[in-house]
Length: 439
Image (cartoon, rainbow, N blue to C red; front, side):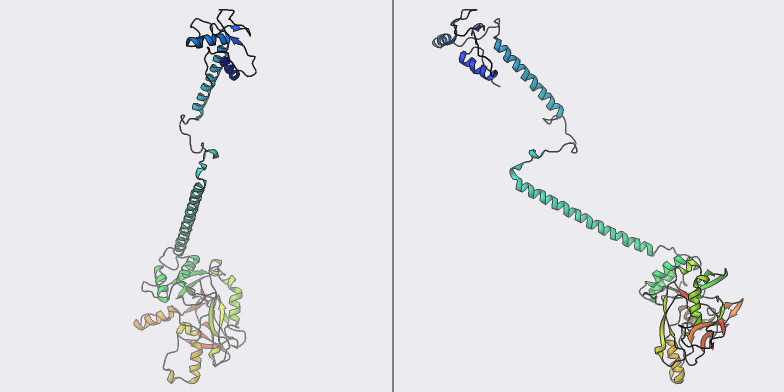
């Protein structure tokens, strides 16, 4: 906005008028009193002062300054208009200042929150766009690497949590004082831990931790668990081995049990024959067909099928006739109960040597029977047959083993009712059925 003096001549007046009022008709005013002068007049009609070029020439000749309006003189009409414009502009400036303070245009109303303030794109410094872009890219890359690092750390934490959960799951069963105190499901979890042990010694250490054997790591026949049979009667199962049997799907079954109570008294086969051995026997078929009738559901849920080696030919002279079957419930073989034949091989007949080799190929003695045999050797008061006695129909009973006698075509091995020895009998005779199983 340009400021001007009221005492200027017509030319100055015209320049001001052209700036302050576009399109407004030009007028002349007295430089002394401010009264309007008619165009072409040489003197002011009001005060008689000379106008136009004469006044300018007189003032220039005298070297005097141009006169200004006195304090008591009336203001020129045009000056009043200019002051009005100035006042309006001043008001506008005040309003702008007030609005600026109120809206923080000048940064004086206090800092706003980061959420409320967003720098406009025009405010960014474009003088170093390339450098800024590189910095932004670097920051983004750093942020991405940080996110990846956090993701990797999170994944590692997740793996650690999974590993911790797996360890916790492996030890989820609390140790109890007796086998009887565990549920079948708990015993199954312990069995998995035993089966995963590196070797037999490590498996025994796990069993000791859960009180599934003596503190010395032995089985003495007191590791018992009650089984409610399908007919409502109570039977007793005893642990006979740890990590002994091979599971059908690989690995070791952690715990092997044997029933001390016979399910019933039955023939091995309807006919007096051992042809087909254990694999083709009537008892094997009956156990598989009737297992859901005889055994409780909570036990059936944790039973695992295992591999059993047996002479499945009957009468034979070849060890190659010892083949594998997959069973959930089975009878032990004579070598699994009594162990291998003793004596000097040089003193036995060729026929007996063949039978011994076939028998030895049908498994290995379970820990319970070997531990009791060893205990008996050290202490004659220990009953070596306490773990081999079976009960049926209210008393002790002879009971079937699964291996046929290889030197006959009609007999299978069995255990006497006092549990003292193995003998053979025709397949059609009746004996107690006391199966084993793994969990």
